[in-house]
Image (cartoon, rainbow, N blue to C red; front, side, top):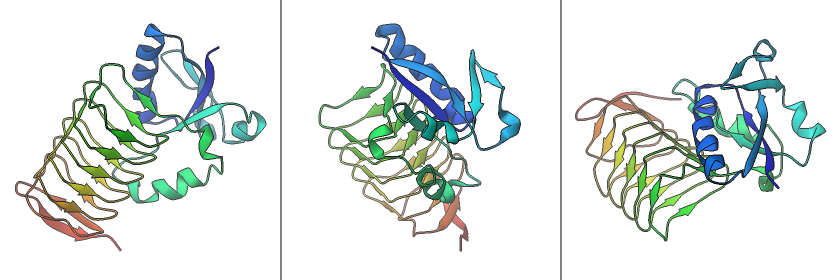
Length: 217
């Protein structure tokens, strides 16, 4: 029996997640996608690939049996991801982890709940990825790297071995991170950056090599 799920909110990550759901269901019909939910009532009735916005988060409480994939997040509000997702106020057992079937992943990888791994990503041995994370297509996470909760990793990102990424980090597309580095909590790494040294919590870095642009308060 397929499991019923809604996707929150009606944003870019949510719409792109449909490719993962469709690929999974082409192999084995695991998910019945009921629709999107969104706090913005102006989005109700909009649709993508035949999947519509049903309404707001009240649907979660009216239908306690359904699963949820919450993939809110962009460079402008990534620090707020934790508060927004926790604000759904649902049990962690209702969250689902969605991994595209063509992801290449070592047998000892650990991945938390409510995490989305999109197509053509490669995850090496000993990697740990936390809860509420997003990894866009064509990215590589090398051996023994640890990624905290509420992190967003863009497309075509390369994270070398033994990197420590703390919670609520946003790594924009095209970024490369050198091995054995530490990326602090709440860091934002700009598009196409080349990170060659540790990044302290709250910093916004960009460039090749990446330099501090500002520090978020």
